[in-house]
Image (cartoon, rainbow, N blue to C red):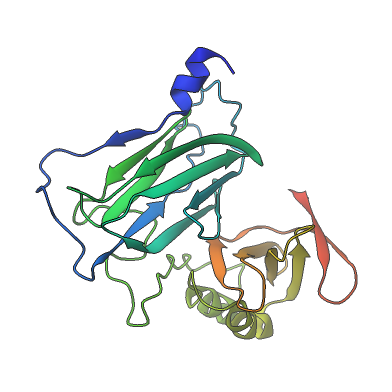
Length: 251
């Protein structure tokens, strides 16, 4: 990696102006929303020599929490983070180590936003101001304390019952609950098992042309760590039970 690329891989810990020093989340814990990576003609990748492209997958982890995979179609939220302790963040690019950083909530609000600048190939951690959009559905989590993801917009090519089920999914819910909620109204279902781990990726068919994928932490207490947006359905190959492999190329 060149010196320039190494510098670009460092995080920019920027505090936005106008924020009050010492602000804390009302519930005593903090959260970090990880935004989707930019896409489309306006995103720009001209000065990006990190090796990342629009087709890349970033894997973001905070402390020992399950990693969140971030692409142009998926984002995630880390919740229940201590406001008094330092946290370790690590990022992998297409399954290769990219960078790591430490941060805390001292003199910062309890809601931070982690975002990617595709032009320069850098990640930044910024304060979320009141009313600012991020990866959360809203700034107030539901009564069960789990952070919901934004519901996808209504689409004519996805059955209404399937859209309703997807909108009720949330990061942190048990994998068994997610399957029980979505499988009955999905047109197809399968699970990709990561080799050598208990982690997995759940795929639900949404009509004839779309699919939704969920990342699961694995194990007896497996929970959902990421919820993707509807995407073009890929070719699935079935194996034993619910096990599948999925081609990354859309049909």
